[in-house]
Image (cartoon, rainbow, N blue to C red; front, side, top):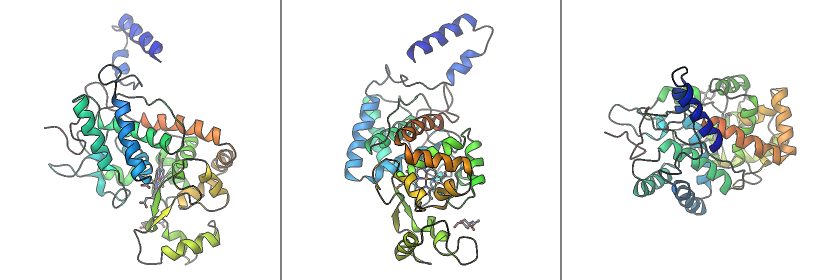
Length: 330
Ligand code: HEM
Ligand SMILES: *[C@@H]1O[C@H](CO)[C@@H](O)[C@H](O)[C@H]1NC(C)=O
C-alpha cells in the first residue's frame, strides 16, 4: 500500500502537466493517513470504545450502524453527527434515525480525547469509520485496515437520510436500488446486512410482519409462526413501539454468521432481513453460502465495509476537520 502510494505520487510528479492525477490522488483514502500527524489516533479510538462496549455491549452495534447511516447520506462525511441549529436541520430527526440512532456520546468522548492529543487533525467521519471496524472486531468479527483521510461536511441532509437509507419494509428491489445508488451491489447488500448479527430493533420496525404484512390482516408467512407468537408477547398490535428485540436472538452480542442461519430457519427479525432469502435467487444463494461458511462471510464483510466507507468522501481541502462533531467550526 505504502509502495503503491509512493509510486502514484511519483507518477503524478512526472505527468502532472498532462493529467489530472493530483486531483484524483486527493480523492484516495489510505490507512496510513494519520501515521505522522496523529500516530496514536487508532489506539485512542480503540481504548475508549473497548471501555464503552464493556459497559454496554450494544454500543458496538449502534456505532456500526452510525457509519452506515452516515455514508448513505452525502457520503461518509459525519453529516449524521450534526445537531440541529444555526440553519442546520439535523439528520438525527429522520425516520430511520429518530428514537433509534445512538452512540453519539461515545463519539463525543473519542473526539475530545483526540482533540487533546492532536488538535484539529482527526475528522469525525474517520472516527465513525474506525469505530465501525473496532465495533466489529470487539464483538468477534473480522478485522481490516481502515482507509482514512475523510473530512467533515459543512451541512446535513434530512431528506437524504429519509430517502437513501432503506426502510425495513421496503421491497427487495427498492433496497437493492438504494444500495446501487451508492455504488454497492447485491453481494455488498447481503454481506453488510450481516451486521444484524448484533444489536437491537424496536417493535415498531417489524410489527407489520406480526399482524398485517400485506394488508390482509395476516402475519408474514415467511416468519416462523412460533417465533412470531413469541415476538407478539412484547410487540402488541398497538403500544410498545420502543420495546427492544435482538436482531439475532441466538448470539445477540456476538458478531458471527448466526444471522444467516436464522434466515434459513425463517427467524430473521426484519422483513428486509428475511427477503434476502425469499425474494431473490442470487441473494438467497449468498445467504446460504454465508450461513455455511463463516470465513467467506467475514472476508466479504470486510471488503464491503471498505467499499461502503469509500462512498464520496470529502478529501483534500473540501469540508473541514470539526472540533466538535455536533457543530461545524465557526
Ligand atoms: C439492507 C438494508 C437495511 C435495513 C432496511 C436496515 C434496517 C434496520 C432497522 C429497522 C434496525 C432497527 C432500528 C430500530 O428499530 O431502532 C436496524 C438496526 C441495525 N442495523 Fe440495519 N438495516 C439495513 C442495513 C444495515 C447495514 C448495511 C448495516 C451496517 C453496515 C446495519 C447495521 C445495523 C445495526 C448494527 C443495527 C443495530 C443497532 C443498535 O442496536 O443500536 N444495517 N437496521
Ligand atoms: C412501511 O412502514 C411505514 C412506516 O410504518 C408505513 O407508513 C408504510 O405504509 C409501510 N409500507 C408498506 C408498503 O407496507
